[in-house]
Amino acid sequence: MRYYFHIVDKYGLTPDETGCEYADQDTAVLHAQRIAAELAKAGEFCRSGVVLLAAVSGPSGPGEGVIELTAKA
Image 1 (cartoon, rainbow, N blue to C red):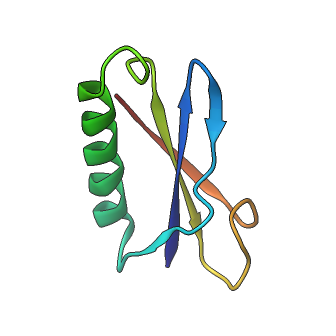
Image 2: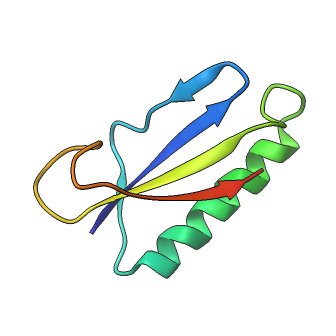
């Protein structure tokens, strides 16, 4: 399944146009948590950031057939 890791911070939404393939949702959630941790280290720019994890099971692109989870920085 393809997962997209969209970043939301005080400046707005930065969409992930590429995504990554993961075998299961748990692995994708761990990746989202790692991204959030790295953003927290980035300083004031990303301190209020959230990673939205969108899962797409079919051939559609990001935003279609979405399951959203969040991992806070």
